[in-house]
Amino acid sequence: MPTYQYACTACEHRFEAVQSFSDASLTECPECSGKLRKLFGAVGVVFKGSGFYRTDSRSGSSKSTAAATTTTTSSDSKSSSTSTSSDSKPSTSAPAAAAS
Image (cartoon, rainbow, N blue to C red; front, side, top):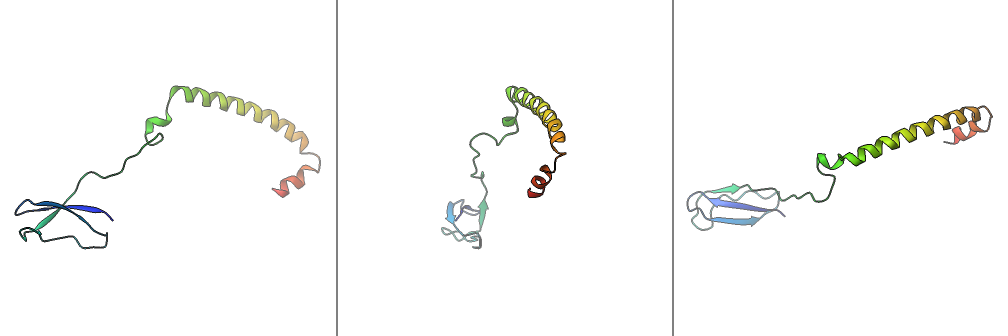
């Protein structure tokens, strides 16, 4: 259950109250019976580790590695596509495609 902070507008008394989301906000000060207002503070979320910031995925070394991998992969796929086209003529490759 979340903890809410309240402050009295009359006597400036401040306190915290643990309430459910479905509970109504408090309206009366427990000290002087004055009007309460809800205080809002910083959100209690902390992102730890890598991958949460835009700069985490950008570094000089990973760009050159990715470019080298792309070049190697494209040359490999060209050589395999030529061997695949010659292998696709026999009727044995048709059942393999149907099984997929």
